[in-house]
Length: 377
Image (cartoon, rainbow, N blue to C red):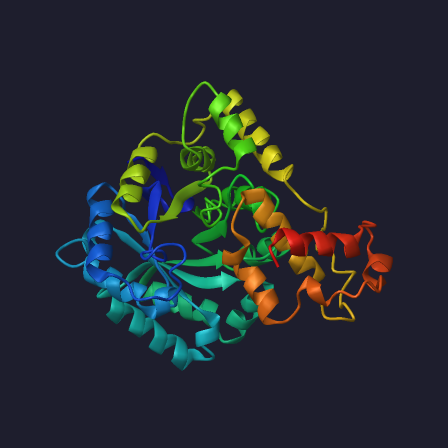
Protein backbone atom coordinates (compact mmCIF):
# COMPACT_ATOMS: atom_id res chain seq x y z
CA UNK A 1 0.00 0.00 0.00
CA UNK A 2 1.26 3.44 -0.93
CA UNK A 3 0.88 6.15 1.70
CA UNK A 4 0.35 9.80 0.88
CA UNK A 5 0.74 13.20 2.51
CA UNK A 6 -2.21 15.02 4.06
CA UNK A 7 -0.82 18.45 3.19
CA UNK A 8 -0.64 20.90 6.08
CA UNK A 9 -1.77 18.26 8.59
CA UNK A 10 1.66 16.65 8.61
CA UNK A 11 0.33 13.09 8.58
CA UNK A 12 0.11 10.31 6.02
CA UNK A 13 -2.60 7.83 5.14
CA UNK A 14 -3.28 4.99 2.77
CA UNK A 15 -3.88 6.01 -0.84
CA UNK A 16 -6.88 3.65 -0.86
CA UNK A 17 -9.65 4.67 1.51
CA UNK A 18 -12.42 2.16 2.13
CA UNK A 19 -15.89 3.61 1.60
CA UNK A 20 -18.66 2.12 3.74
CA UNK A 21 -21.70 2.94 1.61
CA UNK A 22 -21.77 -0.05 -0.75
CA UNK A 23 -21.47 -3.14 1.42
CA UNK A 24 -24.48 -4.70 -0.32
CA UNK A 25 -23.56 -3.61 -3.82
CA UNK A 26 -24.21 -0.42 -5.81
CA UNK A 27 -27.94 -1.06 -6.22
CA UNK A 28 -28.61 -2.04 -2.59
CA UNK A 29 -30.15 1.25 -1.51
CA UNK A 30 -30.92 1.06 2.19
CA UNK A 31 -31.20 -2.72 2.43
CA UNK A 32 -29.91 -4.52 5.49
CA UNK A 33 -26.15 -5.06 5.65
CA UNK A 34 -24.73 -8.59 5.87
CA UNK A 35 -22.80 -7.69 9.01
CA UNK A 36 -20.38 -10.58 9.13
CA UNK A 37 -19.47 -10.18 5.48
CA UNK A 38 -18.96 -6.44 5.92
CA UNK A 39 -16.87 -6.88 9.08
CA UNK A 40 -14.65 -9.43 7.34
CA UNK A 41 -14.26 -7.11 4.37
CA UNK A 42 -13.32 -4.12 6.54
CA UNK A 43 -10.78 -6.07 8.54
CA UNK A 44 -9.29 -7.60 5.41
CA UNK A 45 -8.77 -4.10 3.98
CA UNK A 46 -7.10 -2.94 7.21
CA UNK A 47 -4.90 -6.04 7.31
CA UNK A 48 -3.88 -5.12 3.75
CA UNK A 49 -2.72 -1.66 4.79
CA UNK A 50 -5.81 0.57 4.59
CA UNK A 51 -5.68 3.28 7.26
CA UNK A 52 -8.54 5.54 6.15
CA UNK A 53 -12.19 4.48 6.41
CA UNK A 54 -15.11 6.67 5.35
CA UNK A 55 -18.72 6.41 6.51
CA UNK A 56 -21.62 8.75 7.30
CA UNK A 57 -24.56 9.04 9.64
CA UNK A 58 -27.10 8.38 6.87
CA UNK A 59 -25.36 5.56 4.99
CA UNK A 60 -27.34 2.35 4.56
CA UNK A 61 -30.30 3.56 6.59
CA UNK A 62 -28.05 4.73 9.44
CA UNK A 63 -26.50 1.29 9.95
CA UNK A 64 -23.08 1.81 8.33
CA UNK A 65 -21.51 3.45 11.39
CA UNK A 66 -22.78 0.67 13.64
CA UNK A 67 -21.27 -2.06 11.50
CA UNK A 68 -17.99 -0.17 11.21
CA UNK A 69 -17.89 0.19 14.99
CA UNK A 70 -18.22 -3.58 15.37
CA UNK A 71 -15.51 -4.18 12.78
CA UNK A 72 -13.09 -1.92 14.63
CA UNK A 73 -13.18 -3.95 17.84
CA UNK A 74 -10.27 -6.19 18.84
CA UNK A 75 -7.66 -3.48 18.31
CA UNK A 76 -8.61 -2.49 14.75
CA UNK A 77 -9.69 1.02 15.84
CA UNK A 78 -6.08 1.85 16.70
CA UNK A 79 -4.97 1.02 13.15
CA UNK A 80 -7.21 3.45 11.25
CA UNK A 81 -8.49 6.98 10.89
CA UNK A 82 -12.29 7.26 10.79
CA UNK A 83 -14.12 9.82 8.69
CA UNK A 84 -17.83 10.34 9.25
CA UNK A 85 -20.31 13.12 8.59
CA UNK A 86 -23.03 15.36 10.01
CA UNK A 87 -26.05 15.84 7.69
CA UNK A 88 -27.67 19.28 7.81
CA UNK A 89 -31.17 17.86 7.34
CA UNK A 90 -30.91 16.07 10.70
CA UNK A 91 -29.77 19.00 12.84
CA UNK A 92 -31.38 22.39 13.42
CA UNK A 93 -29.69 23.70 16.56
CA UNK A 94 -26.80 23.16 18.97
CA UNK A 95 -28.60 20.53 21.06
CA UNK A 96 -29.38 18.39 18.00
CA UNK A 97 -25.79 18.63 16.78
CA UNK A 98 -24.52 17.49 20.18
CA UNK A 99 -26.99 14.60 20.32
CA UNK A 100 -26.20 13.41 16.79
CA UNK A 101 -22.46 13.56 17.38
CA UNK A 102 -22.71 11.56 20.62
CA UNK A 103 -24.87 9.00 18.79
CA UNK A 104 -22.16 8.63 16.16
CA UNK A 105 -19.49 8.08 18.83
CA UNK A 106 -21.62 5.35 20.41
CA UNK A 107 -22.29 3.62 17.11
CA UNK A 108 -18.61 3.76 16.12
CA UNK A 109 -17.57 2.61 19.61
CA UNK A 110 -14.89 5.29 19.86
CA UNK A 111 -14.09 8.31 21.98
CA UNK A 112 -13.08 10.48 19.02
CA UNK A 113 -13.54 10.86 15.27
CA UNK A 114 -10.49 11.66 13.18
CA UNK A 115 -12.08 13.45 10.22
CA UNK A 116 -15.49 14.98 10.91
CA UNK A 117 -17.28 16.36 7.86
CA UNK A 118 -20.23 18.59 7.22
CA UNK A 119 -22.01 16.34 4.75
CA UNK A 120 -22.80 17.13 1.10
CA UNK A 121 -22.22 20.87 1.43
CA UNK A 122 -23.39 23.20 -1.31
CA UNK A 123 -23.92 26.97 -1.26
CA UNK A 124 -27.34 26.74 0.38
CA UNK A 125 -26.37 24.08 2.93
CA UNK A 126 -23.23 25.99 3.92
CA UNK A 127 -25.40 28.95 4.91
CA UNK A 128 -27.63 26.62 6.93
CA UNK A 129 -24.63 25.06 8.67
CA UNK A 130 -23.38 28.53 9.58
CA UNK A 131 -26.81 29.64 10.79
CA UNK A 132 -26.95 26.88 13.42
CA UNK A 133 -23.35 27.45 14.55
CA UNK A 134 -21.81 24.32 13.05
CA UNK A 135 -18.36 25.88 12.36
CA UNK A 136 -18.08 26.94 16.00
CA UNK A 137 -19.35 23.54 17.19
CA UNK A 138 -16.77 21.72 15.08
CA UNK A 139 -14.01 23.95 16.46
CA UNK A 140 -15.11 23.20 20.03
CA UNK A 141 -15.09 19.47 19.30
CA UNK A 142 -11.56 19.82 17.95
CA UNK A 143 -10.36 21.77 20.98
CA UNK A 144 -11.81 19.11 23.29
CA UNK A 145 -10.10 16.31 21.31
CA UNK A 146 -13.38 14.74 20.26
CA UNK A 147 -12.48 15.26 16.61
CA UNK A 148 -9.03 15.73 15.12
CA UNK A 149 -9.91 17.55 11.90
CA UNK A 150 -12.72 19.83 10.65
CA UNK A 151 -13.81 18.97 7.12
CA UNK A 152 -16.59 19.09 4.57
CA UNK A 153 -17.75 17.03 1.61
CA UNK A 154 -18.86 19.01 -1.41
CA UNK A 155 -21.45 18.87 -4.19
CA UNK A 156 -21.90 22.14 -6.10
CA UNK A 157 -20.07 24.23 -8.70
CA UNK A 158 -16.60 25.76 -8.53
CA UNK A 159 -17.68 29.30 -7.47
CA UNK A 160 -19.47 27.80 -4.46
CA UNK A 161 -16.42 25.66 -3.67
CA UNK A 162 -14.10 28.65 -3.78
CA UNK A 163 -16.33 30.61 -1.42
CA UNK A 164 -16.80 27.78 1.07
CA UNK A 165 -13.16 26.65 1.24
CA UNK A 166 -12.09 30.26 1.92
CA UNK A 167 -14.89 30.88 4.43
CA UNK A 168 -13.55 28.67 7.23
CA UNK A 169 -10.36 27.17 8.59
CA UNK A 170 -10.73 23.70 7.08
CA UNK A 171 -8.42 20.74 7.66
CA UNK A 172 -9.63 18.56 4.77
CA UNK A 173 -12.13 18.59 1.91
CA UNK A 174 -13.81 15.70 0.11
CA UNK A 175 -14.85 16.23 -3.51
CA UNK A 176 -16.28 14.27 -6.42
CA UNK A 177 -13.52 13.96 -8.99
CA UNK A 178 -12.53 11.64 -11.82
CA UNK A 179 -11.16 11.97 -15.34
CA UNK A 180 -14.62 12.83 -16.67
CA UNK A 181 -15.37 15.48 -14.02
CA UNK A 182 -12.43 17.80 -14.61
CA UNK A 183 -14.82 20.71 -15.24
CA UNK A 184 -17.77 19.53 -13.13
CA UNK A 185 -18.43 20.42 -9.49
CA UNK A 186 -15.17 21.54 -7.83
CA UNK A 187 -13.25 20.09 -10.77
CA UNK A 188 -9.54 20.42 -11.39
CA UNK A 189 -9.64 24.10 -10.39
CA UNK A 190 -11.02 23.15 -6.98
CA UNK A 191 -8.47 20.39 -6.52
CA UNK A 192 -5.62 22.76 -7.32
CA UNK A 193 -7.03 25.51 -5.11
CA UNK A 194 -7.14 23.15 -2.14
CA UNK A 195 -3.57 22.12 -2.91
CA UNK A 196 -2.41 25.74 -2.91
CA UNK A 197 -4.04 26.21 0.50
CA UNK A 198 -2.33 23.07 1.82
CA UNK A 199 -5.70 21.41 2.42
CA UNK A 200 -5.65 17.66 1.69
CA UNK A 201 -8.28 16.37 -0.71
CA UNK A 202 -10.16 13.09 -0.35
CA UNK A 203 -11.73 11.85 -3.57
CA UNK A 204 -15.19 10.32 -3.87
CA UNK A 205 -16.84 9.04 -7.05
CA UNK A 206 -13.47 8.20 -8.58
CA UNK A 207 -15.31 5.68 -10.75
CA UNK A 208 -18.39 7.90 -11.15
CA UNK A 209 -20.64 5.53 -9.25
CA UNK A 210 -19.11 2.56 -11.06
CA UNK A 211 -19.86 3.95 -14.52
CA UNK A 212 -16.14 4.13 -15.37
CA UNK A 213 -15.48 0.55 -14.28
CA UNK A 214 -16.81 -0.98 -17.51
CA UNK A 215 -15.91 0.91 -20.66
CA UNK A 216 -18.17 1.03 -23.75
CA UNK A 217 -16.71 -0.50 -26.91
CA UNK A 218 -15.19 2.67 -28.40
CA UNK A 219 -13.45 3.46 -25.10
CA UNK A 220 -12.31 -0.10 -24.47
CA UNK A 221 -10.73 -0.12 -27.93
CA UNK A 222 -8.42 2.72 -26.84
CA UNK A 223 -7.41 0.85 -23.70
CA UNK A 224 -6.79 -2.31 -25.74
CA UNK A 225 -4.57 -0.49 -28.24
CA UNK A 226 -2.29 0.90 -25.54
CA UNK A 227 0.97 -1.07 -25.07
CA UNK A 228 0.44 -1.46 -21.29
CA UNK A 229 -2.69 -3.41 -20.40
CA UNK A 230 -4.73 -2.26 -17.42
CA UNK A 231 -8.38 -2.49 -16.47
CA UNK A 232 -10.60 0.61 -16.72
CA UNK A 233 -10.67 0.68 -12.91
CA UNK A 234 -6.88 0.76 -12.68
CA UNK A 235 -6.61 3.48 -15.32
CA UNK A 236 -9.15 5.62 -13.45
CA UNK A 237 -7.43 5.23 -10.08
CA UNK A 238 -3.98 5.67 -11.59
CA UNK A 239 -5.10 8.96 -13.17
CA UNK A 240 -6.41 10.22 -9.82
CA UNK A 241 -3.31 9.25 -7.88
CA UNK A 242 -1.13 11.04 -10.39
CA UNK A 243 -2.36 14.31 -8.81
CA UNK A 244 -0.19 15.34 -5.85
CA UNK A 245 -3.09 17.20 -4.19
CA UNK A 246 -4.97 13.93 -3.69
CA UNK A 247 -4.51 12.42 -0.23
CA UNK A 248 -6.97 9.51 -0.42
CA UNK A 249 -9.12 7.92 -3.11
CA UNK A 250 -12.26 6.34 -1.70
CA UNK A 251 -13.54 3.09 -3.13
CA UNK A 252 -16.68 1.35 -1.93
CA UNK A 253 -16.33 -2.43 -2.01
CA UNK A 254 -18.88 -5.14 -1.46
CA UNK A 255 -16.78 -8.19 -2.38
CA UNK A 256 -13.42 -9.39 -1.08
CA UNK A 257 -12.13 -9.63 -4.64
CA UNK A 258 -12.72 -5.88 -5.07
CA UNK A 259 -10.72 -5.17 -1.93
CA UNK A 260 -7.86 -7.33 -3.18
CA UNK A 261 -7.89 -5.63 -6.58
CA UNK A 262 -7.78 -2.20 -4.94
CA UNK A 263 -4.95 -3.27 -2.64
CA UNK A 264 -2.98 -4.34 -5.71
CA UNK A 265 -3.70 -1.14 -7.65
CA UNK A 266 -2.94 1.20 -4.76
CA UNK A 267 0.37 -0.53 -4.15
CA UNK A 268 1.56 0.74 -7.56
CA UNK A 269 0.41 4.38 -7.71
CA UNK A 270 1.96 7.63 -6.55
CA UNK A 271 1.99 11.32 -7.55
CA UNK A 272 3.46 12.00 -10.97
CA UNK A 273 3.48 8.34 -11.96
CA UNK A 274 1.76 8.71 -15.33
CA UNK A 275 3.83 9.22 -18.47
CA UNK A 276 2.97 11.76 -21.15
CA UNK A 277 1.69 8.90 -23.30
CA UNK A 278 -0.57 7.66 -20.52
CA UNK A 279 -1.96 11.13 -19.88
CA UNK A 280 -2.71 11.51 -23.59
CA UNK A 281 -4.49 8.15 -23.51
CA UNK A 282 -6.77 9.44 -20.75
CA UNK A 283 -7.48 12.60 -22.73
CA UNK A 284 -8.39 10.40 -25.69
CA UNK A 285 -10.56 8.23 -23.47
CA UNK A 286 -12.41 11.29 -22.20
CA UNK A 287 -12.97 12.46 -25.77
CA UNK A 288 -14.24 9.00 -26.73
CA UNK A 289 -16.77 9.08 -23.92
CA UNK A 290 -17.88 12.60 -24.86
CA UNK A 291 -18.29 11.56 -28.51
CA UNK A 292 -21.21 9.46 -27.31
CA UNK A 293 -23.11 12.61 -26.25
CA UNK A 294 -26.60 12.62 -27.73
CA UNK A 295 -27.40 16.32 -27.47
CA UNK A 296 -25.43 19.44 -26.56
CA UNK A 297 -27.77 20.61 -23.80
CA UNK A 298 -25.89 22.85 -21.33
CA UNK A 299 -28.61 22.76 -18.64
CA UNK A 300 -29.06 26.54 -18.93
CA UNK A 301 -32.78 25.94 -18.27
CA UNK A 302 -34.00 28.73 -20.55
CA UNK A 303 -36.47 26.15 -21.85
CA UNK A 304 -38.06 25.84 -18.42
CA UNK A 305 -40.66 25.75 -17.13
CA UNK A 306 -42.27 23.70 -19.84
CA UNK A 307 -45.99 24.62 -20.08
CA UNK A 308 -46.80 20.91 -20.25
CA UNK A 309 -44.60 19.84 -17.35
CA UNK A 310 -41.77 18.11 -19.24
CA UNK A 311 -38.44 18.07 -17.43
CA UNK A 312 -36.53 18.91 -20.59
CA UNK A 313 -32.94 19.32 -19.28
CA UNK A 314 -33.38 16.40 -16.89
CA UNK A 315 -34.49 14.12 -19.73
CA UNK A 316 -31.56 15.19 -21.90
CA UNK A 317 -29.14 14.68 -19.00
CA UNK A 318 -30.31 11.09 -18.54
CA UNK A 319 -30.19 10.48 -22.30
CA UNK A 320 -26.61 11.73 -22.47
CA UNK A 321 -25.48 9.91 -19.33
CA UNK A 322 -26.86 6.53 -20.30
CA UNK A 323 -25.34 6.89 -23.76
CA UNK A 324 -21.92 8.02 -22.52
CA UNK A 325 -21.54 5.20 -20.03
CA UNK A 326 -23.67 2.55 -21.73
CA UNK A 327 -25.80 2.09 -18.62
CA UNK A 328 -29.32 0.73 -18.25
CA UNK A 329 -31.92 3.55 -18.19
CA UNK A 330 -34.17 1.41 -16.02
CA UNK A 331 -31.56 1.64 -13.25
CA UNK A 332 -31.09 5.41 -13.51
CA UNK A 333 -32.25 7.24 -10.39
CA UNK A 334 -32.77 10.54 -12.19
CA UNK A 335 -35.03 8.91 -14.75
CA UNK A 336 -37.03 7.30 -11.94
CA UNK A 337 -37.52 10.76 -10.43
CA UNK A 338 -38.72 12.14 -13.78
CA UNK A 339 -41.20 9.32 -14.17
CA UNK A 340 -42.38 9.64 -10.57
CA UNK A 341 -43.02 13.35 -11.13
CA UNK A 342 -44.91 12.62 -14.37
CA UNK A 343 -42.44 14.92 -16.13
CA UNK A 344 -41.43 12.70 -19.03
CA UNK A 345 -41.16 13.52 -22.71
CA UNK A 346 -44.48 11.77 -23.33
CA UNK A 347 -46.12 14.98 -22.07
CA UNK A 348 -44.61 17.01 -24.94
CA UNK A 349 -47.27 18.30 -27.36
CA UNK A 350 -44.81 20.03 -29.69
CA UNK A 351 -45.87 23.57 -28.83
CA UNK A 352 -42.37 24.89 -29.52
CA UNK A 353 -42.17 27.25 -26.53
CA UNK A 354 -38.88 25.63 -25.49
CA UNK A 355 -37.21 25.92 -28.88
CA UNK A 356 -37.97 29.64 -29.05
CA UNK A 357 -35.99 30.14 -25.82
CA UNK A 358 -33.04 27.78 -26.42
CA UNK A 359 -29.76 29.73 -26.86
CA UNK A 360 -28.18 26.61 -28.41
CA UNK A 361 -30.95 26.47 -31.04
CA UNK A 362 -31.49 22.78 -30.32
CA UNK A 363 -34.22 20.80 -32.04
CA UNK A 364 -35.82 20.05 -28.68
CA UNK A 365 -39.13 18.59 -29.82
CA UNK A 366 -37.60 15.95 -32.09
CA UNK A 367 -34.81 15.27 -29.60
CA UNK A 368 -37.29 14.63 -26.79
CA UNK A 369 -39.02 12.04 -28.96
CA UNK A 370 -35.70 10.39 -29.80
CA UNK A 371 -34.61 10.45 -26.16
CA UNK A 372 -37.81 8.81 -24.96
CA UNK A 373 -37.47 6.12 -27.60
CA UNK A 374 -33.81 5.45 -26.82
CA UNK A 375 -34.62 5.26 -23.11
CA UNK A 376 -37.12 2.53 -23.90
CA UNK A 377 -40.18 4.49 -22.80
